[in-house]
Image (cartoon, rainbow, N blue to C red; front, side):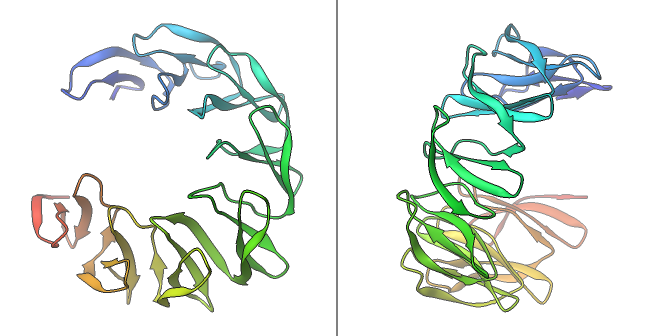
Length: 261
């Protein structure tokens, strides 16, 4: 929540639990949140009581994931643990969050996968995505494919663009259109959409002719293409926009809660 130009935190009942006093405030992940008290200050971390757990000392501070958080100092990135100890030195030009025990880090254009001690586990690819469901999207040669945790290219680099695996499916772009593959690289939903999101709770948002709808994992259009915007399903509901209205829909496509923009 924000009050004026300052940010604080509320609980699920809407009660203020940490007063708005931060110039910048990140989401709580693994019990800690990155905050900046005043504009131009360094970033540190607080717990859910508002107590400072890691003193402000970083130029950037990301979310915790797998016990570590990405931070930067002196223009370089590394990782700290929940005590603020730097466990992977700030030596990278860019870095991503940890996912399934590994993180993608960059030195110039080269990306490598490291473990939580900083050891290089996989290298030799470009434009690497994080691991999801045991697979990571990478560039190799002239296309995008997927590697397993051993670094083996298990889905050939044959598509133009690609997204993370979710619920056994990954959205891929081929000759300008998006569809879905399984973990063998087999096309399970033919590339025919202008956009395709990841699967969430059995459905994925897709766009054709400028309108969004939802498909199931067989490629069946179960909610018609009629929305101007469409987000992922969470707890059985998805937030959509249609004309001047915004609403939450259920998995039948019926409006559950509607309001005007």
